[in-house]
Length: 258
Image (cartoon, rainbow, N blue to C red; front, side, top):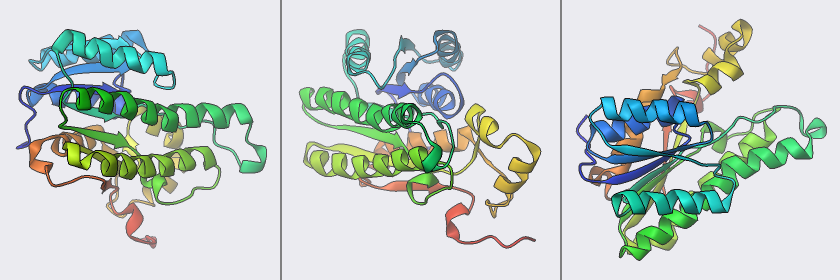
């Protein structure tokens, strides 16, 4: 690991497990103080314990990113505790209930869009406001997916939310480039996380999903965390408005059976 966040103050949403947890710990290992946000208090405090074991300092703020007041509180508590905000990973998201469009409920659609898309918008809004208040400068990484590039039968709301995150990222990058606030997005394929296990844990589903990854395996949460830390670091200072795909070859093209 060569990218460093020494002295930076960062927020990681969805930091209670998986990619968010590993990223929060890596933020700490590379020198950042990290504010962990999530809805599950016990899991969030576990992440905070891991941050401290890694030699870092941090704070857990229970947050539902689909609620503007809670995101405002998250940013405010970050600044109250550490004085500023330098980097953020807007990672919170859900897979939602997968079903054909003609069968999907409005409730399921709204919940997925509220967390995955509205939640990223709210985080961007209040993070950027704070960075501008500080005089500009900062780096934000949003969480999308290979589903931000393609459709997937049965996953309309999820795919729509991730396509939306891609557009938000580009727009935020354009609006804030002259203020030295960089905004990028990371796009994984299937990663070994609790969400991945829920979606693809059954033997036949796992076999199918593995077949979509020419590299022959799923990604790890730490592989994504490494990329996020690099994008947040000054080593990525010329990168903004871009998507970084980490997918084991998923999007390269059809993968014929071996």
